[in-house]
Length: 364
Image (cartoon, rainbow, N blue to C red):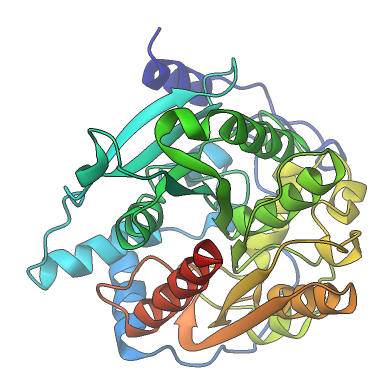
């Protein structure tokens, strides 16, 4: 059975919904009760960011927090909306031919595979080993995949002349926490063992990820430290899930933001966790983890995002632990803006910032 068929079959399977306290493992399970509504309205996005949000609505996106996981996975994504804006502006949405890809398994489950991005100019073998970036996509560990998050790893590969390994991992609720963290660690170990055979430099491996993936990069750096794996030279964490306190400032001022709101955070937590205690585990609640001795880290946040305070408090906790960390919040943009640099100026600035930080790390 091909990987695509196997994944499709997995999406179509499921059991009847269990009680809320049991955090059902079915992709057809009804969503949890919504949290109390908030009347607070978020700041107004920049016009180019608003154009993407408007396009997402035009594509028919429904509120994720009202859907089952199966239906949520079929919704138009922010990346779809950005591509639609590109199309309206006469830009090509075809994959950049300057980068070529190959998929390889790192585990036995159909979801345990990676897409390896390489500069096309190095397809026949680079003269010198290239830096390597292990990238983890977002989606709250429930929705999205490496296809949804294709733009960022492709851009990183092109701009940094690097091999980028975009990791697919098992999703909740079929596989609950800590399956995603276990897969992220296994994939990182696999990359350290195989990077040289792909033309990569095993001395120059970095981690990068967005949202749930922004959490995984920090958790994986901790895993590498504690399990004797080569440490990454840098960590780029974009709007990470990092703090389980639901009373953070951004949970309130961005409660009604789009495309991510505070109710969706509750929805994701409901499906990826078995008990509420899972959400307090230091692999999820990173601000309570042992953060000492981690690699230099860059944290990128969006102003209009319920996860903004996660990144800000994570940066403070890392500094307190003695780590070198730089955190920057970009104004006028929302969650999922990273990777939209062709149509959103704030995303262009953020991408260049992250790329510059990785470039400097590889140069050292």
